[in-house]
Structure formats: C-alpha cells, structure tokens
Length: 248
Ligand SMILES: NC(=O)c1ccc[n+]([C@@H]2O[C@H](COP(=O)([O-])OP(=O)(O)OC[C@H]3O[C@@H](n4cnc5c(N)ncnc54)[C@H](O)[C@@H]3O)[C@@H](O)[C@H]2O)c1
Image (cartoon, rainbow, N blue to C red; front, side):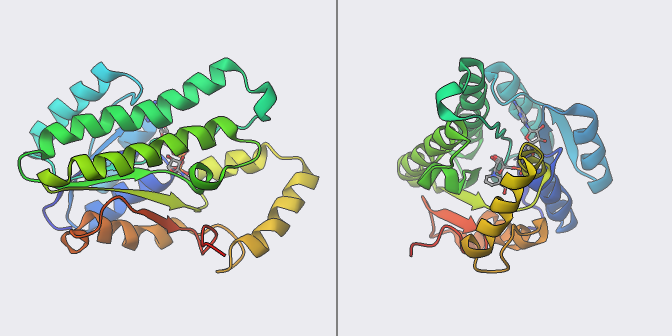
C-alpha cells in the first residue's frame, strides 16, 4: 500500500476505523471521511491520517470533501466506502423515515461517493471498494430496509464495474461478517431469547468458528483488493464472513 492515496468513508468506527489505522501503518496516504466528527478526528490523528467531516447522503458535502481532501492527497488511487447504517424493524412496521434514512446513507451514499471518486480516477484508473452485505444478496429478516439498500449497492457496483472498466477502474463489493459497533447495536436490540437463538444459528451459519470475525480478518483482504495485485478482478462480491455466504 506504500504511497497509495486512499479515501476511506466511515473511518470513525468499526471496519472503516480499523482500515484507517492499518493502511496508514502500511504507508498509504489515508483520508478518512465520516459524519461522526470527534471520533473520526481522533482515529485519524492516532493513525497519522487526514480527516474531514462528510455526510455521504449530501452531494455538496461529498463533493467538497473529495475536492479538498483529494487535492491535499495529491490525487486518488483507492476509495473504500464503508459508511453505513443498519437499523432493525419488522418489514410491515418499518417507518418511512427509517426506510428513507437507510436508503440515503447506504444506497445514495454509495452513488455520491463513487461518482465523486470517479472524477479523480477516470484519467489514471484505480480501485473502488463498496461495503455491501450478505443481506443484499439473500435478505435479512428484521432488517428489510437495510437488505434493500445493500441490494442497491450490489446492483450499482456490478453496473459501474462494467461502465468504468474502460477507465482502468475496478469496482468490487465486500460482504463482511465482522464484530464491530454496528453488530453490537444489533445484538443490543435483541431479547435474551433472540440472542440465544442468534448465537445458536451462527454456529451452523459460519463454518469457520461459528461467530463473526475480527477486523484483523478483514484487513489483509482489503489490502489485496486495494492493491495492484487485484487489477484483473472487478464486479465481484468478496465475502469475508467465515463462509456464511457460500452457496450450499
Ligand atoms: N459489521 C458487519 O458484520 C457488517 C456486515 C455486513 C455489512 N456491513 C457493512 O460494513 C460497513 C461498515 O460497517 P461497521 O460494522 O464497521 O459499522 P460501524 O457502525 O462501526 O461504522 C459505520 C460508520 O459509518 C458512519 N456513517 C454513518 N452515516 C454516515 C453518513 N451519513 N455520512 C458519513 N458517515 C456515516 C458512522 O459514523 C460510522 O463511523 C457498513 O456499510 C455496513 O453496512 C457490516
């Protein structure tokens, strides 16, 4: 990753924060973008990375952050778009406001950040890595709006992978199962019976270890996809999930 110029959204928490630290450690030049300001700044400063506040649902905010941030980096090689939200609700009682905010962050955020990155990658090529979810491929009971928004991420990713290939830009998606603050929120929303059933379900769902992985399980995969070695791979869903999305 040495010298690669990388923008990471969602850099204040979870996988985005782990990647800000790990890629900075690998001598990449990292710009972290997040709506959560003090924490985003703290994580970036500890890693020696840059930070800008950015709301991925807002075109002006995204375009400003990319214009200012990429100028400071001296160009762009990689976008890792990890910002996302995952609220829970039964499908039939999902409020309109939850549907709209989930689509805004996860689907529109992907659209806006990818378009902004494209402007900086179109001449020299590069990598776009979007965080989708197994939920977008196979659904997720209790998170219908989230699953729909991640389905949108997959459709967008596969389409621009084709459209932007002629610019030397690869566009891939990650479907992770990694223990982060987002997953802790999901666990906290469950009753003790639901939690017991969930943990039992994971033992068969995830062949490698029976539970979600750690950020350390994700970092080497991201370094590979963000690096030169993945140049002939595009439009893929990379499941980093202990085998839960495997077809069987
Ligand atoms: N944790 C998992 O196992 C899992 C599974 C499937 C998909 N994902 C996806 O991976 C990505 C990272 O998830 P995580 O578990 O690290 O989550 P997380 O909650 O720890 O971090 C998400 C980050 O996104 C930021 N964010 C939210 N709304 C934003 C906005 N409008 N503008 C800018 N930033 C915003 C938050 O401030 C936070 O820092 C998400 O897209 C998530 O949907 C996670």
